[in-house]
Image (cartoon, rainbow, N blue to C red; front, side, top):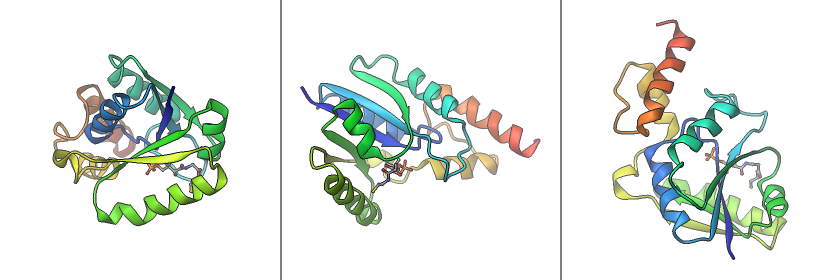
Length: 163
Ligand code: PNS
């Protein structure tokens, strides 16, 4: 039985994330999407909002669970008895940081290995940061995020900018 964690900030979840969730869930027995709740970054969405959106968009996938975590990813993995970390790789620019993280995590918890999935071509340019940038400047984000997330992003932008 392989239990894997797909960790991230998911601020907000994009179509690229959802694609990785779908594909990873087909290769492992159980996939836990771990939403980072660390104090350092100031996300646009609260942890509850990010978890809520992920639950909504991943609802139909039977072996996927959404959980939040704080602290070290390897401790979360240990706690859940997960042995695989899933990460999507978009471009060569992702590789250096991802390799460093994978190697550090394996050093800290040798029970855990990182499995990289190549991002599908149609989402290779996409990131949560780009989505927020487009939304803040009034652009259309329909091609970037799952349908239920579109309104939430616009709502949040209105809240922050008063427009
Ligand atoms: O979506 P992101 O922001 O690229 O995800 C980064 C994430 C959450 C995978 C990474 O920051 C992480 O695992 N943070 C938890 C703290 C930790 O374990 N840091 C050491 C990694 S070497």
